Length: 275
Ligand code: SF4
Image (tube, rainbow, N blue to C red; front, side, top):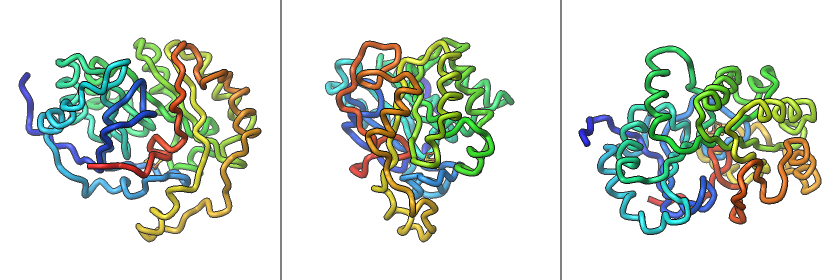
């Protein structure tokens, strides 16, 4: 396959991700995110500068050495930061993966999505080589979404509908922060959206936690949720009930996910990222 010289800015790599998509996965965390979620557990990925530069081919050759671990539906997940900010790199990286039959997943918050060109043509190309989209929907109420992330959610909801219209499998995830993202009205609106979408295979609640707090201190930014505490089991169960999540946190698929780990996703990935 012909490859270009598009370089990806990689924040970090994790060889054995157990909760970033189906099966065991190699997870690539890309650098850069425009959103500023108050609960972000990876503020060090925000900057578009920095990160280690990799060509898609070199990175794929490194990652593909782990292929023997990807039986039972495993594969490669690209997370961040926000991976869609590096869509050219992503397309090339996933084309290499699909040429070898590897399962590909994107863990995204959807912020760069737009129906405008040139993005949408690139996104269409990306959909062809992406098996699963894990989409974070952080808040349904637009004003609250702006307050939480500094950005609108209208293009994120549009992205969910676009994926559905194009038959692309997705998992919807929602970070649950007591008194911030657990409003009954908004959770019901999220449920209505999920019901409208035709390709949602799983819905996950990611309980808020404070493990990434020190990272805010490291980059010298005041942590805005100092007073927030993780949700109780009861609060999680209530949210799950509203979202129609039953045993194993699955919606429509039969696969169970006993390895569910609330510490993943760009909103709370594990701290065990390795090169
Ligand atoms: S939680 Fe994810 S989408 Fe939000 S600021 Fe952090 S990296 Fe960006």
